[in-house]
Length: 296
Image 1 (cartoon, rainbow, N blue to C red):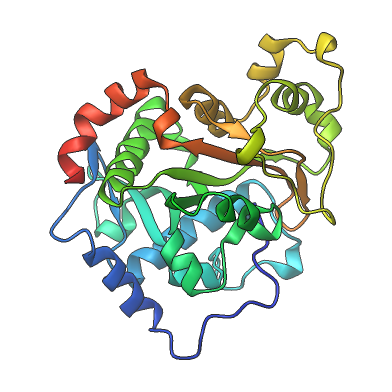
Image 2: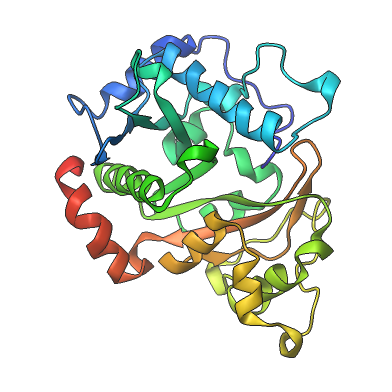
């Protein structure tokens, strides 16, 4: 998790959250779904009610389950929300077999921030922790997308839910011709040494290099190189990684140099760089064949 961009505010003339959400959703005009597997459907939030419901799902996972923040700092409305929600697209997974309205069927969510939206509102969410601005400046011809606030309710943490989420992401990436996906992925807890095997494996074997290198901001940088390469048990390191990190690795992602401790959310964050052109072809074939029909 990250804490946002200190001192950066949305302009006073910005649209209301409801108007902004509706406008962004209409950009993928007429699409009810971006992916579907059995009773699970993935699409963008359509209005403020659905965004609020997604924020409530995030609260249940980040605060109730994972213990983000301290008791007296927890949002009184039981929503995990910040200023970036206004300009992001909110990808939702709905269980269409559940009773009730669509906003009551949300079981997972992912927040998507395109480069042009970030530029209009003062930057990306994760650049408070990592030098994303430097990365973007080296690749002016590339279109960047930041992914964040990923969460799924416990009963739906299955391969099927992950697959439908990636159907939606792939359709979205194709629709907007995204070149690079970035964002933070989190290890639980604020003691990097507790994840020495996994962090060291990423540092020695999976770091982005050359023009794609990204470093944690100097004031927040914590070394990921906690063990010598010869001491790392690769099988154990992979087994200890959060599912999101393992998923990014399988798709061909690289990782930034250094991690960041986010005390507000009780996590240790690493930075992910996933070039669309470098995604493992078997995943392109797997997700693309189904999601491509949603992406035109």
